[in-house]
Length: 215
Ligand SMILES: C[S@@+](CC[C@H](N)C(=O)[O-])C[C@H]1O[C@@H](n2cnc3c(N)ncnc32)[C@H](O)[C@@H]1O
Image (spheres, rainbow, N blue to C red):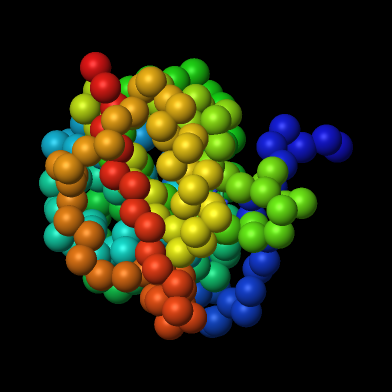
């Protein structure tokens, strides 16, 4: 079967611990499948934020704990990361996180509706070899796909530790007439994710892009 989207990730089940495996049983209770699901769930909250590719979820968890009046949707395909998140949610009675456990482009391929105040994409897979650049998540098609889901004045925040990807992200954002660089932050980010930290440890710099959707 031909895939609609070229995979932007390497699907690895990883080693699943017993704790993660136990928690994965709860996935159905925290899952969202459609934009309508998300809009319904977000009615009880002031804002709604999407984090794409949350990895081990440390950033998603921190933001959700610091901002209880915001609903956070976390998207990831990596089952051990989803298991860790579910186990934290369960043990700490976190109420404001829901999960989309598939390629985010399947969700964003639905009829668009302005839903998110913020979309975070922290260290998307860099695909450093040139022949793999077409697998990078952030490109013109992806930006066109997400723009209709971000509220006017809503933000997109992207980080990467790969200079070559940073150049391409910046060019993609600057080609768009929909987004402009912004100095306002929906939420302050004052720690590094696992992949950002790895980049720093290996001597790379972290590039950040904070853009606002124009009205
Ligand atoms: C390099 S890791 C970064 C993880 C985390 N954000 C961090 O900074 O530590 C990128 C993550 O994005 C996920 N990912 C890549 N493409 C995705 C997609 N289309 N939909 C959802 N998740 C995706 C991958 O599974 C992977 O866990």
